[in-house]
Length: 160
Image (cartoon, rainbow, N blue to C red; front, side, top):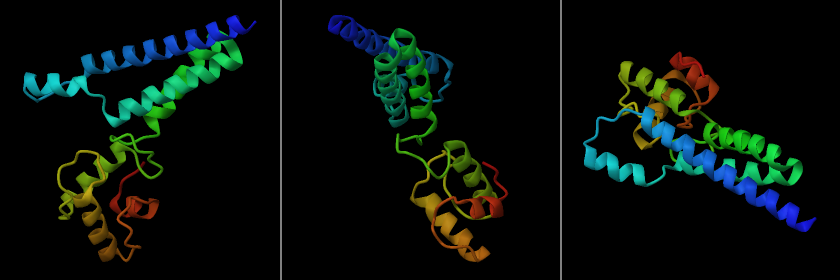
């Protein structure tokens, strides 16, 4: 019986790695880049924070699913874990309880169009964006947190 359990866990880990690798290969094929080929080749060799979070979520979900439900549980766990790992993190792989990359990008566009220099609309809540958000919040009488909370997004006209 212990051998059967060990085989389930090994199968789960294999499936998780296969799904994670396949999804990254598909994402790389879909993405378009304006970078030179040499830069593109270098960046594809290193996983981004978001890719790491997705892989960790998929692997953890697959192992937990295998322990509970065998191979079918491994596949379901890998899918759900990968989704949560991907959607629950920002571009750097940090847990984003506040705003998604698309929400940040929309806020950056709104801030820039209203004269607040948020920098490039890259979807990252960096120091320029935070400073622009604070200036916007100060002028609107909002709490100057530098974060994209619901009242700030509403004042900007950005919907999550």
